[in-house]
Length: 195
Image 1 (cartoon, rainbow, N blue to C red):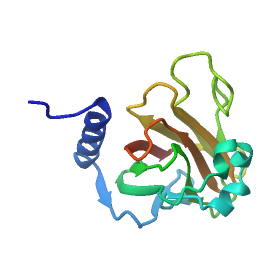
Image 2: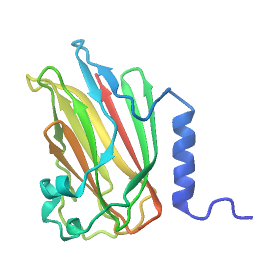
Image 3: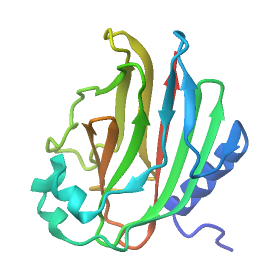
């Protein structure tokens, strides 16, 4: 008897089980606040897909695939858990054409900002490997340029030729996702933690 049809189904099940086993579950629409050592709060909003008009103004506007309408991109499940000064988000979504841009808003009140780490096969560089980049890593800085936290994003259960490209647009983390799983569910895990 086959319980799981493929690795992605198993990965999705394991992610949801792991997230439900610890931390404090939150409402999907609820903003989460993390507190820094300095006592400042950083808000993390609800991930959502960018509309076609917003995509045309983003860094990814030059992608040929962005001209397609992604009206059937949708979030199926958005799980949030918070434990101390760490938040875990697991976003399950479908994409009509395999190209989507998910936006995660951060709310900064004291001049904080996000910065991505530059790593190989990162920021839309071509890769010769079978698997493309499916991880994003960055730092949260205070207004003085001191590190006060980190964030990561990962495309879970990735297969060949899937890609996750990140961009910072103001206080928003934009995650452009290229998958070969049109109309199938995909999972992205996002973590943010303050020091």
